[in-house]
Image (cartoon, rainbow, N blue to C red; front, top):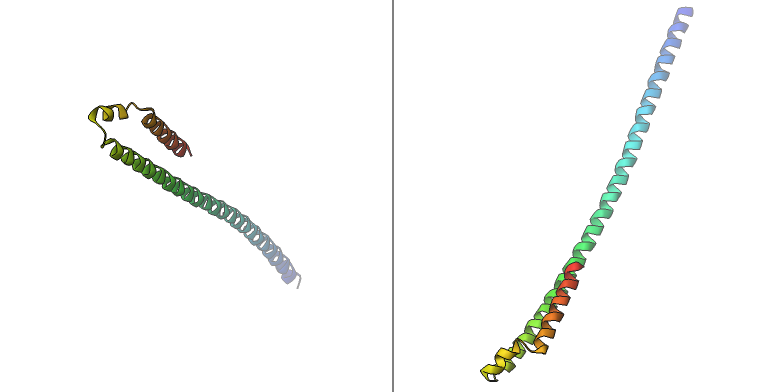
Length: 116
């Protein structure tokens, strides 16, 4: 009986040790799982930010394209109006203050949109 008791004590101590080891491993796995969940949340947030930035850039590109189209239309209209004038005035068109203002404004718009 004493021998069996000793064996039971040894087995009990052995199983307590195994139980503690398994609980320790379980806690490590829980911590790793929590860390992975945090990383997933960070990545999802980054993905949302990237999508928002992409949409913003697309809208900026659309506005730039629209502004360029308007400037081209204005330039075409001015060129059409100038085509009805004598040749001497056509050469002065490129040096006229109106053309310089249009070009300056278009460059300013392009710089502003490209910096955003």
